Amino acid sequence: MFEFVRSHTRLLQFLLVLLIFPSFVFFGVQGYSSFVDGSNKTVAEVNGAAIKSGEFDAAHKQQIERMTQQMPGVDVKLLDTPEMRTRSLDGLVQQRVLAAASTKDHLLISDERLKRLFISDPQYAQLRRPDGSVNAEMLAAQGMSSEVFAERLRQDYMLRQVLGGVGDSSFAPTAVSNAGVSALLERREIAVHKLDAKDYLGTVQPSDADAEAYYKAHPALYKTPESAQIEYVVLDLDTLKKQLSLSDDDLKKYYEENASRYTAAEERRASHILVNAPKDAPAAEREKAKAKAQSLLEQARKNPAGFAELAKKNSDDPGSAAQGGDLEFFGKGAMTKPFEDAVFSMKDGEIVGPVETEFGYHLIKLTGVRGGSKKPFEAVRAEIVEEVGRQMAQKKFAEAAEQFGNLVYEQSDSLQPVVDKLRLTLSTGVVGREPAPGASGPLASPKLLAAVFGNEVLNNKRNTEAIETGPNQLVSARIVKHQPEVLLPLDAVKDRVLQRVRAEQAAAAARKDGLARVEALKAKAAEPHGATVAVSRTQPAGQPRQVVEAALRADLGQGAAVVGVDLGEQGFAVVQVLKVVDRGANDPDVARAQPYVAQALAEAETLAYYEALKRRFKTRILEVPGAAASAVK
Image: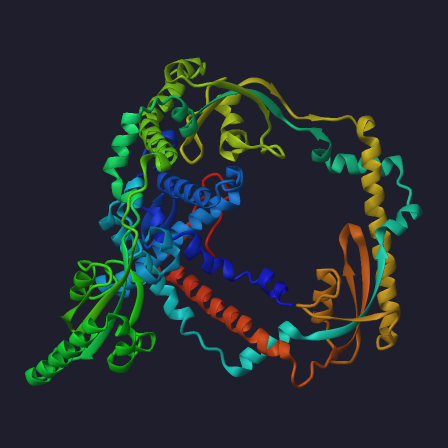
């Protein structure tokens, strides 16, 4: 029943920015982006510091790359829309606002806390080794060192602290919470009479004058779309990978140099018996504990099979004693250093001790070893081909990108020079100012289409500049033939015009009858006319959203009410709102709704706090590159 709540919690989208746009995606190498577009234009300001268009482009590119890695089959055009570009800039602004607040409020993350957060955060599970350490090889493949990653991660958690302190501590008074639950669950009994516009089509007959007036008022509906036949050339990783020639020697060299990547981290399983002896305990007490541990060691070695029973009776570790001392499998870095050193130097089945740690004295039995072996070359050859090819293509792309941009600019009357120089393919297509339905690849890029129909390309017959249409993808295009939009003559579209006018007149007739019926029913609003149904925000009972909202907004202070609801081209609805339905004292939905309401209130506080931070740090969004301009209120 709470599908409605999940679908309409708009405030939740704000908090998702922290997940969709983690702060460190806005740092890093901008690479070739600076030369493909002007990068000095200010698109936003936070705390007196400018965000430049080049910085935005780099952030948006990295965000698209990250999302395509998470969703390999997604169409890139869905990620490079004006809405997504607006979200990218919002995320970059948010990162700046929270960074300013973090600095101002001295919010710090210690090394030890950073390690704990990284180990426990599911967002970074793929980057963690079994022992909890970061996978340096995976970072290196992204051009990042462990030190740089740690600093960016620290920055990310510092920013989360700014908003987390508000949302996590949010508390709504009972009266406020109850009001929210009541608004969410309130049910009203209504009777609905729909006047369908289709039923009025036979009652209207638009004239030729009506058709002509509508045609003149809505010329955009009757124009053939502007189009252009273009040539275009694409530089991307797939093209460059096809140009590569990889030998077995290259692949084997990579295999040996990255052996750790193809070796499963070793994990060991051990059981232990702990004799408590804190480090600050008197020496005599520690010696007594050590002697006890030595005695238990002798018993364990005489009867290795009875180690578990011995642990159950004697171990001071409450977490493992009941399991016979079993600690299950763990990797390096999970245990205190002296304990780990002992475990990873033992043979399977061996019993050692006493091993001294800050907790006391341990007797340890090694019960299992797994991992630590390297996969055969042939088993990972395809993976290496893909990885080496990607890395070499990425390197080659960085080198070729500047050449690409220079060639299409310096020899702007043809694309053939760049095709010949970089061994690329010249493609053709027909495009409009907006991506065509079903378009994919470069021709689905609003940024490329805007450049194609720009003055330099359209009127001066030049190449476009190098346009970034996707991750690691540059495109340049030129117009071969341009077809302007043309207003079709009225005679050619008259049937379409009359159909449209008839539909609007039918809807208007339904609305007129509906309003008259509303006035007629007001005198006897409490008498249901037709079948009744109970509706709420979570249970609309099949009624249109407009009907439900109007019914729940109706003032019942003077008893039953009658309201009219304009359904646009669908017609009109006359709604009798008869009464509020009593939920009963023990409605189970109340308990289920409370967490949703509490979450929504917490999110509202968080959003309000963020808006206050934007004002505090004088935030302004001046322009969203490639999208409609916006402004911070």
